[in-house]
View 1: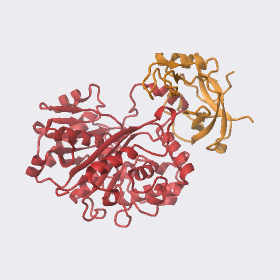
View 2: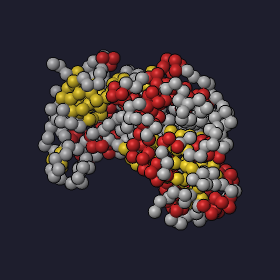
View 3: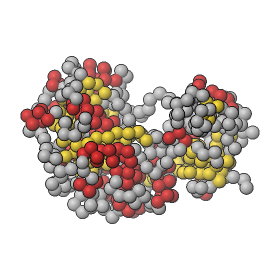
View 4: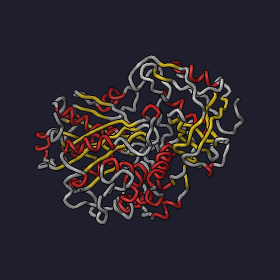
Length: 383
Length: 143
């Protein structure tokens, strides 16, 4: 069976905080979940599905206890890094479609700005990677360098992704970075790990966000049918037993599957939230999803093509992880801006007219080693 | 056998099931585990074959030590994930494609980072960790 049309996003909430040194992760979860439920016109007792990354010890048990969720029928702590909540949409849709639950909470909260470490215990591959001085930026830089080598992608082209994000972020009162930047600003910013500069990287914040999903009957009764799930797909993409290819992401697998389930093509997409941990992440993803040919991502993003109102494909109109919000894991904020665009509640300066099809793509982990990828396509009631 | 270096040489966590690999590094050998059933080389070392699922792994194949650079980055700022890399000088993180096929993560050493290029021929050099293992790194091929 398909999940197409079987679930809706009926409530949503983005925490307005960006620096939260005095709140626990559990507390941020509780605040965003309660607020998202309130947005939907529902309460904690209505919830029978909980989906989050499980970063607390004892995972879903601990959070459901903390939040007093006593009616849970589905728990899921799929953890794939920043793409987790995008994957959770698919999992919740599946659970709802099969009747295993009717109202699901998908939640994200993290505090990397206030805490230092987000790592877990040593994994088997760590001994063959970390000892050589890996860090997040260097590993994405490995992918950027290879993409430049194979396709001639330039630093100036990568810079356009940040430029577009900043053009959008200037309208977002909660964005961490609101200054508009130019290509020159980006390529002249400090080189962190060649070829990535400071302005090629996303912000680090403390924040959270949640959505509420429900079956069609509940959605109709709430008057919330503008954000329908049309297609979902998730996949890992990894080091492939020593045959790693740094020039593509898991979007190569998830894009086509999500589009096929949804029955639409990249040309139908009016707005896209593309995970933007780094500028290179966006370039590779747009290629993999089919918005342009493999290798042409650099020219696709150049010259303002991602800017709402003037570009051909508005991307990350909240300012994205590159300028607005990214607490180590950014998938939720990709979802939230797509929800706003579909509802018509994005900032008027960036709202896409007649936004009837939107795409959300999450990339969690590293382009340099292994990642979890997910694509979700959203439509409206009559889609 | 092991070269002098100012690069950090963190001691790798030795998962017990791949101890044979790390023991061999102390003798200057880069072992390439190979599936006895389908002949696929296995990287990163594991005690089973991720290609066919076999548990029969042969540890007798040794890499020649020759390869080319598949990708690299010069890390100028920002500490590495491990505490030994807290205060880096510029260092080169890279994937080297061994002539046997696997693309393995490593460092490029004994050269000006600005001179490193994709496709460059490199050769194996060992850096002793001081605890019975050595790290496999690469320098420009001396040829």
